[in-house]
Length: 154
Image (tube, rainbow, N blue to C red; front, side, top):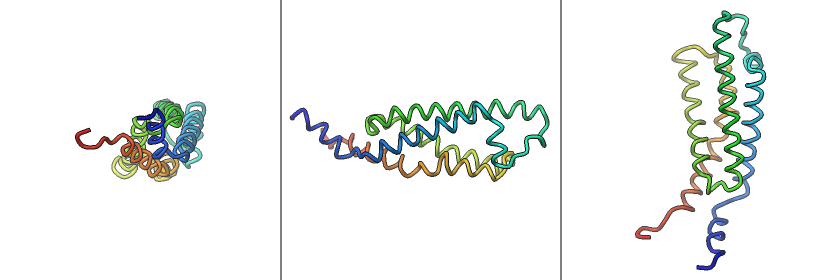
């Protein structure tokens, strides 16, 4: 098999949009994470949550936890930047990202409708942090599956 055949097969599945999507996800996550880490109250105020209406102990607990969420989101961004260099090779990073983007909305629904601890306005973060990435991440994973699929008996 010629040395170029692996690259040719890879190019057949790897599309430039995949790289751009992952770089966009990286930039978004790093910026969003940095804002939440450096100014945790900003997001709450932006979404209409009046922190002054909460008792001091709740705010002292809530803001550091929210900063940890921002740190995690920012770290995902670094992973997406790595995956952008070769999306089909680094599909496990994309899979972990998609799982986070699936579980985040589940946690949101629980926090809003079951536990009633978040306002519905937090749903805006779900749209930009999670929902818009479902389709492109899924398509990247499907392409990776096609690329790495081996014929039966092979």
